[in-house]
Image (tube, rainbow, N blue to C red):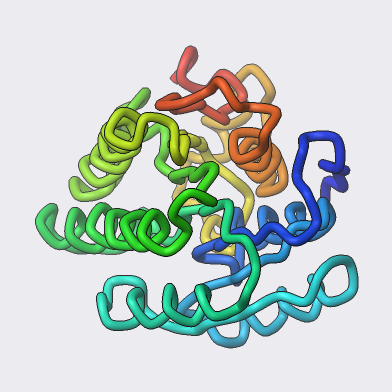
Length: 249
């Protein structure tokens, strides 16, 4: 666990951030960091138990969270979630577009694009429509796969992650920085999804420059910076958070 203080990045009390996939991994770490910075977190996740657990953690360190359980591939849920968020009476400033299926999921490229890119697009459109002039910044969780690296993943995964990065860049230009739109491209991160790594991964990671997996908080730290007013002139950028893995794999 990496404990970082983001009070110096320009976040202000009373601002609200929607974090999708807040119940575990990178989403959980990001939600907790934002809460420590005084930002109100609206956490969305399909995992009721995980979301409830992180809600209790946020209660102990920051403003009371707003939690919604649902499937982000369901447009009706996305629409309802944004309606509920608009009723909270807080300034909706930030979006962490993070939820998505794990790389180990078996599905077609078409389904992967629909589930991954489609849900990110729906949530981002809802953010802009709901927040209006208050919308300051949004981030997209992509991957080094499909953007900086080719590896042994199902075909849908690099295709979807490259599509997410393309959508992020498009929205950066389309919205002209209101809100700004940036992304992160993690390598292997130590989360519940990587608790049972495929054969050979440990040896491969040991050969990388840093020689270890990344921690969710290390990706969350990059997300929080990109979201924040401290990154006010950064727009349309995809940041690899990979320990230089893409230079050596």
